[in-house]
Image (cartoon, rainbow, N blue to C red; front, side, top):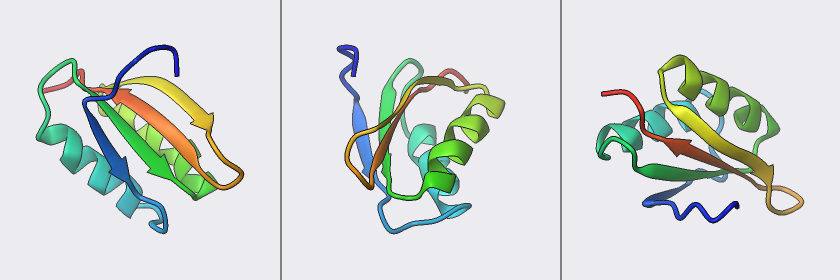
Length: 81
């Protein structure tokens, strides 16, 4: 994880796009600039789409990694207001 401690964690296992992105975006909107959100997904499409969507929104994707056989973590730093 590179030593980055997330400020908030969002477990979206069982959710699919576009809900994974929408819920991640809503969570980030409640956070302060520079804070890190850890999103957990169990859908390979979400593991691809959420980081791409976050970057297009102006946020910084710090990490996308598979943490178990079925789950991925996405670390996003809030960079846009």
